[in-house]
Length: 188
Image (tube, rainbow, N blue to C red; front, side):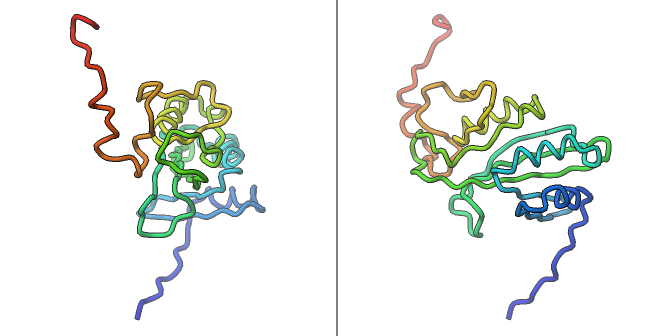
């Protein structure tokens, strides 16, 4: 017989502020090893991020990272296959908060086709320093950021035929290494 674990009381001071400001938005929060994650619907992500930065009670003035996770084959049920993850810090209040939004593809992800379901609004207008981080997520996972000032590949070459951090991308690649032209010292 399995035991019911008691519900964990989340005590992060930012959560009630967000809940009050966005009372009609379905929000979730989790805590693991004293790190709080706020899970928001993708269509409300930009508004919530602006609130977290602009509201003086929150004042998340530093976005330290933007990354993504591919949950393909993950043993537990998730809200979507992909998650875009933002790591925020408030130096004024000495707080950290992770914000996560889930996306589910609507077309086959083994190719380079643009999937309109894999889009979130860019937060470069709030934190300009995340421009390159969003480009990296786009390059590696194929998640597009609308209103990004310069969304193009940053790690792979322009015509690279896939997004290599997707879990359905083969570990050995699809022949890119075999057809890649090596340039010697005299040619460079």
